[in-house]
Amino acid sequence: MNYWLVKSEPEAYSWQEFVQKKEEVWDGVRNYQARNNLNAMKTGDLVLFYHSGGERQVMGIAEVIKESYQDPTTEDTRWTSVDLKLVEELPRPVSLKEIKGDDRLQNIALVRQSRLSVMPLLKEEFDVILSLSAS
DNA sequence: GCCAACGTTGGC
DNA sequence: GCCAACGTTGGC
Image (cartoon, rainbow, N blue to C red; front, side, top):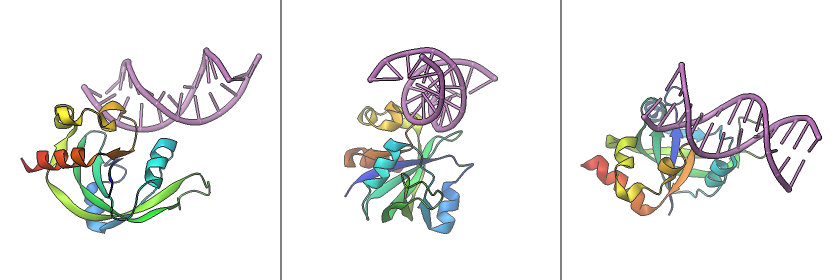
């Protein structure tokens, strides 16, 4: 099992919308590195959902329920999508500030490569973020 | 609103 | 194949 983090601008697609819909096609990725990460996702992998822009916080957890396939929003065969399903909302959101302030999270792309929209996490990093939310 | 980081495009 | 110019993203 692998762990990931995906970003969304809440004005474009919010966690609240995801909570209502329970499932979503994760489409529109137009960056090769992000696409490669999408393609590496396996059914059952867990994905943190992060709000970029004004909020900058991790909102909750999703699960991969369909592995990568042609992105339905484009004819261009270079781009792919996955399907995500709601798992649960975090007890409270974990802010970028908290993530940047934690020594154990300094290697994640959210800190090192702020523009990447789909990134892998180590299990340890995933667990640290969950524990921050619970504290 | 600004700027840094990064990606893409196009001229050579 | 290199690099300048330009566009976009996202944090501050």
